[in-house]
Image (tube, rainbow, N blue to C red; front, side, top):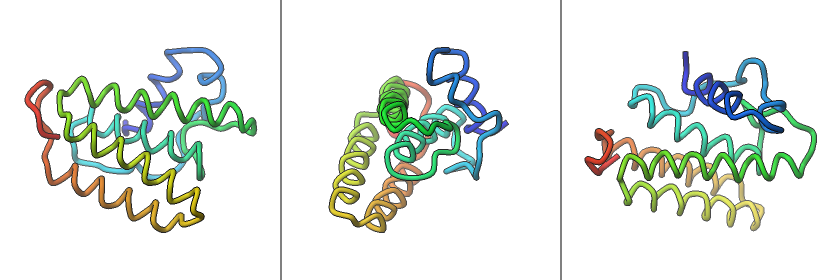
Length: 138
């Protein structure tokens, strides 16, 4: 089971409009493999939020742009909440900055810069490692 499957299961368990808009099976490859499962899950939640705002979502399937926007915000928040529970404030900053810089890049019609921001942020987090909850350092 991949982090995308885990994300789908968690969102389905939450119920509501978002659960009703889920793909039966996520589409596409996971963002990062080999990290601790909860780290993979939070990265996938944040990436899915990004894709709902700007690209091709892999977990949520909706033609409703308002639902996509709200679901994207919900997934950003879910990922950052999970990251904060790990206790790594530097990683929270990195991913919060990523969300902001990718939004700015899209507003300036530069999706390539947004993708580079994603690549750089995931690499930075990967270099920092994956601690146990509360240990600091992602």
